[in-house]
Image 1 (cartoon, helix red, strand yellow):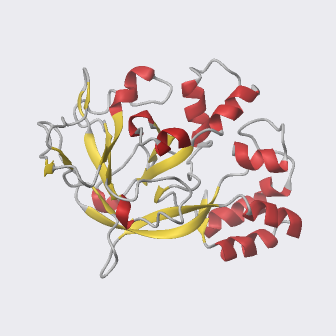
Image 2 (cartoon, rainbow, N blue to C red):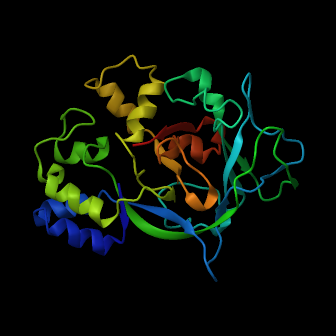
Length: 288
């Protein structure tokens, strides 16, 4: 829910928490690469929109029965601060993100984590650096988004206090996804965090900035087919097995609006990431 330097976040925490709790909270921060619109001499680590470069033998991603996906973003892994982020990304190659954004059906079909039939509506492709690629034009009926170059800035990220990882430290056993009786859930501390950095933003790795409840819980519910209650420890365990791969916020410069100023999220299990099984990444989206 928050992005900034470790020192700045420690200072904020010490204004609202005891020294011991502040250090526990700081110890739960995760490093992530914030992707901001590049300007001037900024190094470019990726871009929103434009046209993707796909392997020559690859087909444009398609949701069977609905049509081709729209190209959202490309990330150049070699340009990310890989040694400092908290996920095991390839040290070269490109990540391509696609999403069925409703251009073809005026938003009738939705890609939802809880609907397995819709999972083909969001895709991550990894293109190794040595692969022969060609730039692809968009399929009929799909318009490309304007190109917006992105630069990567490393920072620390904080999750909401009701995130399973945070809850387990400060109130183990408290109801999942709910506030509990501890200063990290106080309105004063939450207001300070949101005032410090309330923007979702674009990001690789780190804690997701969820618009609603933690996106890890949404993914866990989907994987478990919605068959476990929120007080079932299996849901918490499953949620803890996913990490943020990427999030892309709504972006005026690229003409991107996800629902009501929402964001797109791709999560992956660390073991799948280590094996470069990006086809196993899970998708969800949230808006206010």
